[in-house]
Amino acid sequence: MKKMKETGSLRAEGAILVGVGKSAEREALGPLVELRRLVETAGAHVLESVWQSREKLDATYCIGSGKVEEVRVLADRLKANVVIIDHDLTPAQVRNLEEILDRKVLDRSEVILDIFASHARSTQAKLQVELAQLRYQLPRLKHLWTHLERLGGGIGTRGPGEKQLETDRRLASQRIQELQRRLDEIKRRRERQVSDRTGYFSVGLVGYTNAGKSTLLNALTNADAYVADKLFATLDTKTRLWHLAPRMEALVSDTVGFIRKIPTHLIESFNATLAEARHADLLLHVIDVSSPAAMAEAQTVDGVLQQIECAEKPTIAILNKMDRLEDQTALALLRNRYPREVEVSALRGDGLEQLTGTVIEILRERMITARVTVEQSASRTFAELKRAAEVLESRAGESRVELVVRIRPDVLAQLAGSLEGLRVIEPAGFAAKSPRAEE
Image 1 (cartoon, rainbow, N blue to C red):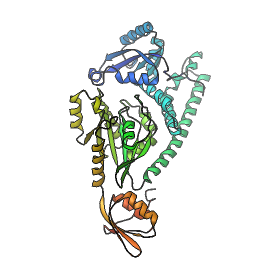
Image 2: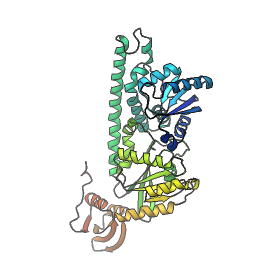
Image 3: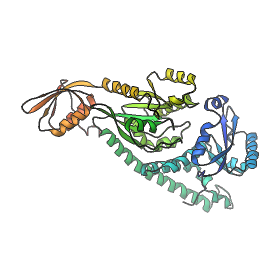
Image 4: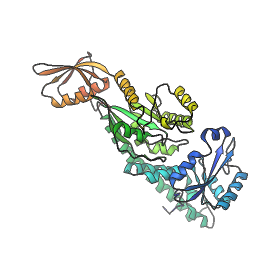
């Protein structure tokens, strides 16, 4: 494809932020606080913020024409490089704004994509970001392919430019299909890995970006997950072993953070990463109680969980950063919304013992008491059973050992279908499940 106009890349640029929406939205979310953090994370510095209260967005500019002129004057005076709108723009709106403002115009999704591109480290994350970028750019190619403007007939006219545009669209569509195929392979492989974790109770950490998920993962598992006070510091899933109690362990997985107005193409592109949340036995919804928009952020996460079909999963609300809490009213609202909650400071370690105890209670609620026998020579079967179950009684016979264990029924079914020398005596009629039954 021909080189197109750069849409991201906010390094060291001076930016003016523009928000538009209902007055109630501004009061709930603060005056563009989140967009400011996004822009600063992307590497730009904010010169000024502007808000326009409107019941309905303007079809031509998104904001009103009078506000556009106000922003133009402000951008000229402050010598701003870029104007960023806290809303998704159509290609026509971007073109109309740039013609009047005479400088680059970006929307919210482009800023988020720029951050994701700069934070992607693994092959999977890079593929997911590229896919999201192409999905965003494909319907906007006519605007991005700026060299068309130099053709005699202008944008969209007949001639070589139109042919090149169609070529670009075809190449972009082919690349999207290739990226989707590779990510589908990764997703299938990851889902096989998740389903093969026989015997482990799986816990998924979900939450708004920068809520403290990676800090909590480190505190619970002594992991070395990267932690930074910036948005979207974590793009790759990390899974670590959590020792809950003797003979009782869980696998904890950190996931990419969610955000208000999260672009749909990002959710679609990060499907492979979100598999950890979909397959988890329990979700820990981490909420930053010190955030001025804590309730709105929590509701945003609830909405995304609905989108990825995780809303019905057992969930504990983790009210994090209690050491920085100032607004007791917000805390009361969160307690009312999430009856099953634990209050912690992941950074200081406060409340982690209570959290561990709560997870142990949930795990034990899912267990049954079973009586099994194992051939004495089946050492691997003994090891797997002791790792996956709490052994209550043990009695050795001539050739087999009889055990009474506390274990999750689904785990017992998988073990009985895959381990040699294991026989389930009680509960009677227990059906073993082949490890490949779901494939």
